[in-house]
Image (cartoon, rainbow, N blue to C red; front, side, top):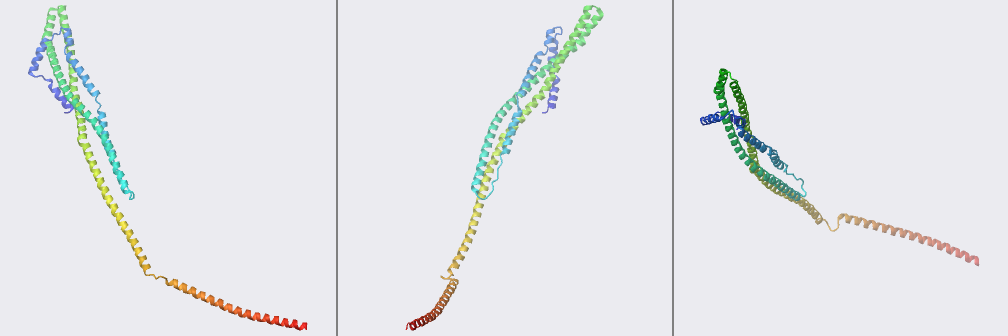
Length: 355
């Protein structure tokens, strides 16, 4: 219910029931305007209760810190937003990286869950307190309504008394003073007029107090609605948001497991294919080399040709050397014969000279 509706509902109760009218008339008959103390205290008990009640209501609002609850709710959202997965990249060290990623995810989840659990526990305490406050505000509203009704009775009785005095007793006293002309009669009429004015002011004060009661009612409902709204938000956070986040985290971890398993299978398949390609290439090279070596003779034709050419060249050189040797020996023999001839000739010449 809005503040306007609360105001309208309360003001509609200004009209008295027949029973209340009867009580007001009886009460009005008991009012003695000549009793200054009674006039002074008229309705003061209700006014005092209203003053105490207003102070209590104000204290309830003053000590309530809904901002802190809003801050805690914001903290829950912040924790949920801060939880973010990080993608790992690369092929080498794949299993180690993904294991580290999953471990990091679990660690962040555990940290976030611990923080959220702590916040939710605090929120649950606030929720209990807010529910107690809402119940207390219900009582305060009913109490304010009772004060309002009591003020209505005082105001109705006071107005009834003023009406009776101004329409009956005061005109009679004025008429009597005018007729008699006695100073005491004139003063009595003036005194009654003054008493009426004083009492009218008192009734007006009660009407002001009643207006406070009228204003207090929607204010109580406003605070109560705020409390109820916070209780609902806390309840929604505890029973909906947090469990949903936890279930989503379980799913996220499950998806991560599946993704890692699929990625691992993909890595294994890629590595297997790569090994098969490498082994096939090595097998091809080995087979070709083996075939080439198996078809190769013990001695290569190139080697035989080179060896044969070297041998022929060696023989040619040997033959050439032998030929040169024979030529030199013939030349040496001729030279030796020439030298021997010269020596013989010289010896014969010496012999002839000695004879």
